[in-house]
Amino acid sequence: MRVSGQEGGAAGVWQWLVAVQRLRAVPAAYFHPTLDLAQAARGLGCDSGLVEELVRAGFPADETPEGLRFDYYDVMNLGLAAGLGRSLAEQYEQRCATMATGTPEDWSAQRSWRVRLGAPCTAPDCGGAIPAPPAPELLGGRLVEYQRSERNPNDAIAVVLTRGRQEQPRTDLVRRIHDELLTGLTTGRYQYSWLPDTLRLDPEAAAAHGMLDSGVAAWLMRRWALEAGLEVRTRKGYLLGLVGVEHAWAEVREQGRWLVLDPVLAFHALRRTPGGTDAAAAFAAFCQGSVHNHLLAWPGAANEPFTEHQCAAGGHIAYRCGRLPSATLARPVASMAGV
Ligand SMILES: [Zn+2]
Image 1 (tube, rainbow, N blue to C red):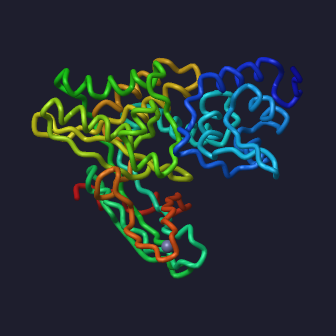
Image 2: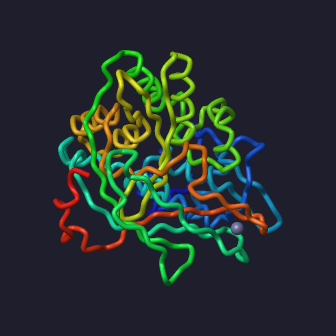
């Protein structure tokens, strides 16, 4: 086997090969190979020669007259499975894991954020949509300001106040709904995956293939909670950071209060927190019922779009949310407390 110096030696190659064997690939009905060899290599953070090696080892690719073509989601999921820390998908996961640094007090404190929201359409000739305003009040925060951008009609600037909250389940039933999902991820019964839209919209099929993202996880927990006779809903929003990460979770009503169940976030932290087993465990416990102050909610359920858009050009809204440098800390946050 050719071992490229860029791959960090033979150990790296073996990790890639094991990941290919373990990978739960996008099912054939959803397979949509659009990436060429160079793009796949970029997504994985390795060189093209290694990607060809992985194809020979069974990584799904289409052979076309123009060369190999790969499914974007297979590339992302292989990067996650390899765990070498160099793929694009792992950089996103690392962003989620940074939410696990600090203490429960840090995660519960009141915070102020200035964010740019965007609702451009993927169809080049479409005017896109106006970003739907977030609803931080759903998690105990407040929308302080919301303005359309003057520069871009598909952008809005929002100032939000978020507030975390420490809670934990009091009943074994609710605890088990969270833990069942988390154990499913840590044991590999479910592969945390980036999913094509067609599969995300069919959570039953995704779960049947053993692949789930936060939206499918929320859908599964809702189903289990309903089977257990509990009141439950799903929500979606963003994990706030320099670049916001779209995220979904379940909320279960227990003894008169709503608890956020977010085992997918716990899983990201457990997988990515370097060496910090105690810290990651504390964070995982926090995800079992608490509200993190990086969590920004939108109204509606996990499977509903942020912004309605009937696109004449056949596109869809690529909603986004990113943090803006701001003078928010200079704002008189105290004056907004207690609202
Ligand atoms: Zn459109």
